[in-house]
Image (cartoon, rainbow, N blue to C red; front, side, top):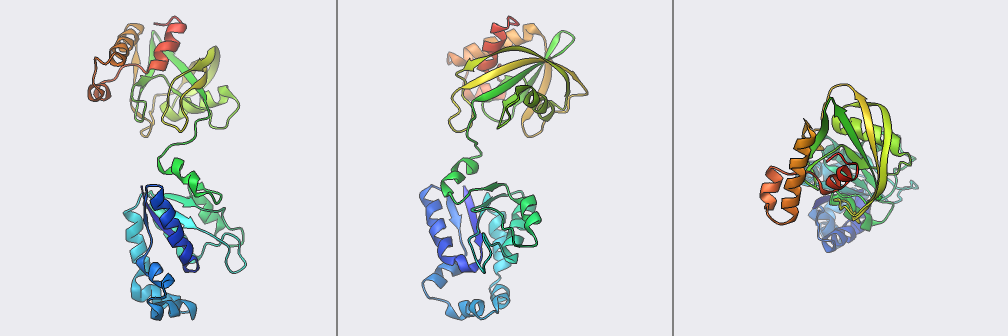
Amino acid sequence: MKITICGSSAFKEQMLEYRDKLFAMGHEAIVHPDYEAFVKGEKQEIWSLVENGEHYLAKKTQGYIKWYYDAICSSDGILVLNFDKKGIKNYIGGNTLMEIGFAHVNNKKIYLLNPVPEEVSYGDEIKAMYDEILDGDLNDIKQYLTGAKVCDHKSVGMIVRKEEKILLIERMKPPFAFALPAGHLDGYEDFEEMAKQELFEETGLVAKSLKFLIEGRKENPCRRIDGTWHFWQIFEVESEGQVNRSLLETKQTKWVSVSELKELAKKTQAYEAGKISEDDWRKNPGLEKVWCDWLKELKII
């Protein structure tokens, strides 16, 4: 991943330190080259502007604001180094606020090393834009930069029927396959409430009622960190509304008959046996393996 490091110029030593830490983690980290020069005692005519209260001249003559805008646009995200400064805990200044704004409007991830400062007037604006707070631990950035969360090992699945057919989604993200609407609990304790939320997020349907069907552990992998198994609860859902699929989570939705489900399950068997290539599977997948198992246990296929 490519990350632009942002923060007050007072944190120039830390910028180089965290750049090197990110390099060691296998990421490409960007810091304006002048910060390395300042640390080495070079370009003192520019640094003196910063120290003498004429930072605006350095920004204007050196084009720092435009440079950071271009760097952020070319990155996957920004890491904001917000340490204590001027008696303010976790300081974020006006220039860094702009850089957070640049990242936000360009759909780049925004990671704060420490919590949002409480002693600045624009704390609400920062809270509205950042994605994750690392609480001082750079190691936590790995799961965010890979797009993966830590698995909570709890999943909920929903069977939605319309006449004699069952609703399927085709996953946009791994594991690539057709599946029934489902999701992780992500800190929720109530499986039913999460079932309602996931159904709406993935399909746009509103759950009117849920009927518990079955539960248990499955050794099914997901794309999350440590995602090797899940404890499931499966519900049959009576829903209302029109299907309006998530464009981020799904490639398509479709209503299928039991016989069509069986054919998709046969394709999954062939894929598991190595008879279907990975490329062919992604172009035209079968049913996710865990759903083959659940639907067989429920005697639907």
